[in-house]
Image 1: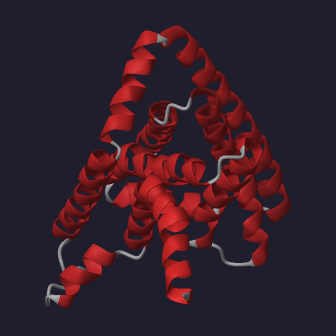
Image 2: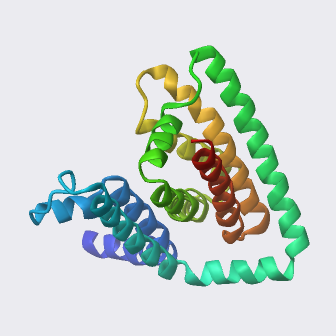
Length: 241
C-alpha cells in the first residue's frame, strides 16, 4: 500500500517535474563538474600530469576540456539559443535597446559598488579580478576564449536559464541569480570575510542579466551581452598589460 502511494506520488509529481526540468539539473551538475576540474582530474588519473606539462600543452588540455563543455551545452540548449537569435533578428531595435540599458545599469552599479568597496578595503581590485589578470598575462589568447565564450555561455545557462526554469517567481529569481553569480566570483578567491563584500558588484551585474531574461524570455540576449562585456574587459587588460 505504502509502495503504491510513493509510486503514485513519484509518477504524478516528481517524474513530471523531472521531465520538465532535467536540462536545468544537468546544466547545474555540469557546472559543478567544471568547477571541480573533473575532466582534468580524470586525465591525471590516467597518469598524465598536467602540472608537469609545458604551458602550451597545459593550455591545450584546458582548451579541449572547455570545448567539450561548450559542445555539450550547445546541444542541450540548441533550440533555445537558435530561437533567441530569431527573436533578436525579428525585434532587433527593441531587444538591442533593452539589452544595452540593462548592461549600462549593471555596469554603473558594479563600478560604483566596486569603487566604494575598494576604498573600504584599501585594495585596487577584488581577488578574483587579480587572479584573472594574472591568468591573462600568462595565456592571453586562451583567457580571451574562456572569458568571452565559455564563461558567458556556462554562467548564463546556469545562473539565468536554469535558475529561471526552477524559480518562476520573477524577483525571487533575480535576487537568487544575482547572489549566486556574486558568490561564484568570490568563493574561489577570498582571503577574509571582508572579501564577500564583492558579492555586491558582481551580483549587480548578475541581477541586470537576470532582469533582461525575465523581460524577454530570451537567454541568447544575456549570453551575447555577457560575451561582449567580458571581451571588452579582457581586450582592455591585454592591451593595457
